[in-house]
Image 1 (cartoon, rainbow, N blue to C red):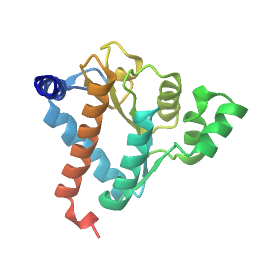
Image 2: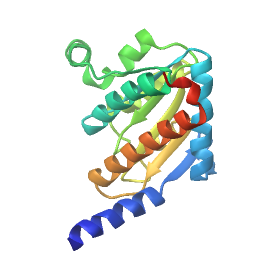
Image 3: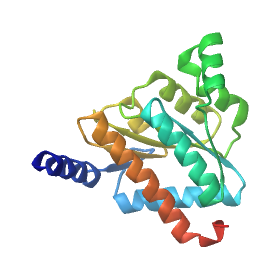
Image 4: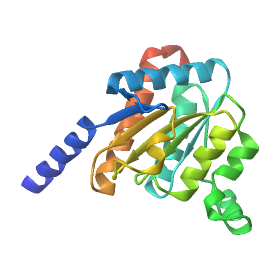
Length: 194
C-alpha cells in the first residue's frame, strides 16, 4: 500500500510542477495557460474551425478519446489522426514521420488548432506535424514531458510540460490535463452541451 501512496504523491508532484510557456518562451502560470487554451478553444468553436489531436501509443488513444469528447461534449469540431488505414497507408507509401503532417496538410485550414501530445516531445512524426501546422497558420498546443529540452516543448502557441521522469507519470498527467481543460470549457460554456 505504501508503494501506491508513493506513486500517487509522485503523480501529484508531476501535476503540481506543470510548466506552461507561450510561443515566445514566456513563463505563464498554470491558470493563465489554461485560460488562454480555453479562449483559443472558444474562438475555434465560434469560427467553426477544427481541433486536431495527435500522438503515438498511449498518446494516440488520448488523442482519439479527446477528439470524441470534444466533439460530443464540447460542441466543436475535432478529429484525431489515428485511423489505422490512414496511418498505415501514409506510413507505408510516404513515411512514418509524415503520418500526421500529411493528413494535416490535406484536411486542415488556417485558424484550426493542432493539439500535439508527446511524452518525450521528440517523436519525429509529432515534430513534423507541428512544423506543418506552423506552415499552414494553425494554432498549436503541445503537451510534453520527460526531458525539459525536448523539441516540441517550445514549438506551440501554448506549451504544457510535465516534469516527470517516467512515461506513466507523464501520460497520467496529460490525461488529467486534457480532461481538466475540456471540463473547464464545458463549465464555462454550458450552451455547448445538448
